[in-house]
Length: 434
Ligand SMILES: [Zn+2]
Image (cartoon, rainbow, N blue to C red; front, side, top):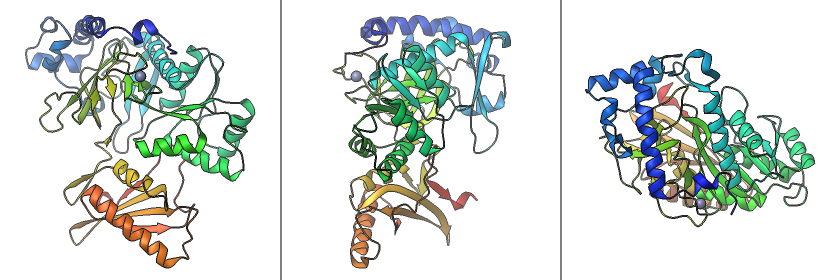
């Protein structure tokens, strides 16, 4: 079994807990002394750093939410002095201010280690050529995987996002065996590779990839693995905590191994905020255990997921993050029912007459929410076979209604007509908000 840091990745559960406890005690004191907005939260409930004696006391601590970061824009949440910061990242905001995160050199080093652990899980080694097709910039994807690949001693190709034809040429000519990008982009690349008549395994040497920044389904994973003949690993990160590498799948896909020596996970009930046990789904919360630039305690990520601690055959002992069901921000509420795009994707992937390229249009007509799902037919079906297309549409409508518990209008369109994204897919148009 390949590991990047076996002494940490296969540490016993008891040793890990001791390490987490020691780090949390230190972190709470550091934050109390250096992050004024959080100190105020602790003071408000008369909680002192000395009340936190081990990781078991974490539930006593108040939550940090995205609004705290916005209120402190741009630097109010930084705990390290400006002279110690070496990098700023920011996440794009659809509304309002950016969320800014500052990193010290130690933060960058730890993040790179976590990204390196992830690349090894995807099958990379020192001989690898790692093609990074995530955007480089304020978004953490590109630079995060870049530093991870260098840290583990692979060759990195900083392709960044865009210009698909050139990306394919680089992947083929440089013999990349590992790729990092969004799941929707790898599907797009697979389409283009096929169109060019290039053969995976012959002209394209990819054997593994880490795909993140969007929620994606198991069905999507199977499609990617089958089409390109690669190991497709889900990777998780968020700029507020650290970019990609907070958690990643190993080859056994038992859930993403969380780098919980640095990032301590919890799942809490979305309404009551009470901690939930392993296996139950709720909002994912992270506490940074080692971060200096912008440490966060019990940060509510808005991602909906569950955790599991089942042993993994790879020997890594960390707690695992089950696939993200959706971001509470992406969750659509249609006539009172919660709908995640990932549920729609799962239904589409089970039907071979359609392709997993879709767009969701939501509107409100006569005070009633309506949802239309525009889906591409698979290239094997012609739009001219009217009766057959109608049959596909009817079946999809019924499958969708039973999976979502709410009806949707299905519109089937010719292959290649749903807009492709070169970055993060924009799958929803919600006219209720316009
Ligand atoms: Zn594993």
